[in-house]
Each structure stands twice: as C-alpha cells, then as structure tokens.
Image (cartoon, rainbow, N blue to C red; front, side, top):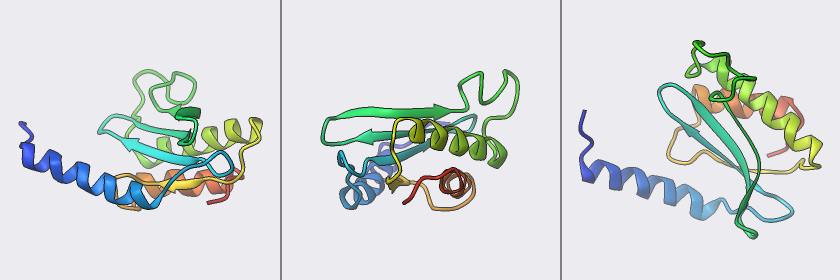
Length: 122
C-alpha cells in the first residue's frame, strides 16, 4: 500500500504537536514510543544532551522470542516492564511520556501502565 505524501505530513504534524508540549530534560527525560505492525519500541531520551539513555523493544530476543508476535498488548507489557527495570538500574524514576502520533489506547497504554507498575513516574 502506497502512503500518500499528504498522509505522511499529517502524521508528522501530529507527532510534532505532541512533542512540542513534552520536552525531556536531564532531570526528567522523555519516554518515547514507536509502534509498527510487528513490533513496539520504547526509549528514554535526554533531549538536552540529545541521546538515548535506555531502550527496549520487542525486536530484542530476550523480550520477544523469534517467531512470537511482538505487535500485541502482551508484548507491549513486557517492553514496559523491561524498560522500567533498566531505567531504575540507571537511577531514572521521573519521565515525561511522549506517545508520539499514537492515541493513548491499546498497546501504547499497556506499555505505559506496565512502566508505571515497574516503578517509573510520569
């Protein structure tokens, strides 16, 4: 399926609209989410320094075994739990949640809830 340039531009505008309100800092880095049909990715980014501090995704073999479905809520929960554990190891507790262009629903909400249960504070 070919994606129209107009649709791509609309997606970028939605992502920028959310991102201009949610800024990460050294004290409170930004937890950003990207989801595709097969996988879900999450990372904690320090916008001031411009680099990623912690990341987790279903593309990793430890989180989602090869051949398993990485595009469902169960996998999103595993990513959220793993990301929270890795963040706490590095001493990160406070984050600003950046859902990007996605609605806070389904896999995105499952990942956020699992990260909260893991010890992160939004």
